[in-house]
Amino acid sequence: MDKKARLVILISGNGSNLQAILDACEVGRLPARVLAVFSDRGQAYGLQRAEQRQIPTIIIPPTPNRAFYDADLAGQVAVFEPDWVVLAGWMRLLTMNFLSHFPNRVINLHPALPGQFPGVNAIERAFEAYRRGEISQTGVMVHLVPDEGVDDGPLLASQTVLILPSDTLETLTARVHQVEYKLLVETLRGVVTGQIKPESL
Ligand code: GRF
Image (cartoon, rainbow, N blue to C red):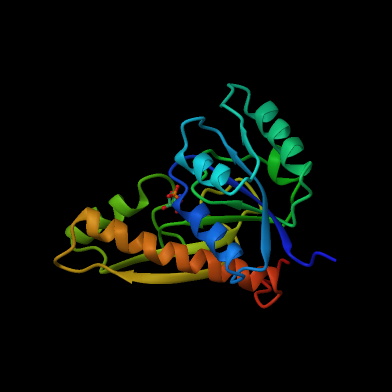
């Protein structure tokens, strides 16, 4: 019997977090299998990363009707019978038309600490806040997506990232990404092995 957790990953771009998941699955660090990778952008480099591992890729370009889009996406994701749906750099807000199909089964990664800098360009906004003297650290969070709240939901894990006086946006971005790769994989490992059990699970 295949005891590996079934994952479907949603991406919109580079897919370096997807790569971290694929690598962890390959070496056995993450007892999971990526069944499919979905993207709303045909140009997303992450699609090539999936294809290199012979993982099915599905592109669903944006449509104006959000309700229809989300219901269609849910139907196509459900075909793969995922245990978990992972938003790894998925840049499109999901409505209940999608989320209600996977209650407590959608996991999001966000490059900021809980409650800080929801939405796009979070690292850049944190860096600007640092330069204004408002914060000294930022971080990364992994959380469940129960509803339409943006980068908000029951926390699975978070990790702080110090911002250094010598940092540029580029060095800070690179450091946040390194933390993301590790935290995402370790959190997924905890979730699929049952070691991480938020109250809502
Ligand atoms: C990551 O920083 C993720 O947290 C954010 O978008 C970025 C995606 O990077 N939502 P990649 O596509 O995984 O390389």
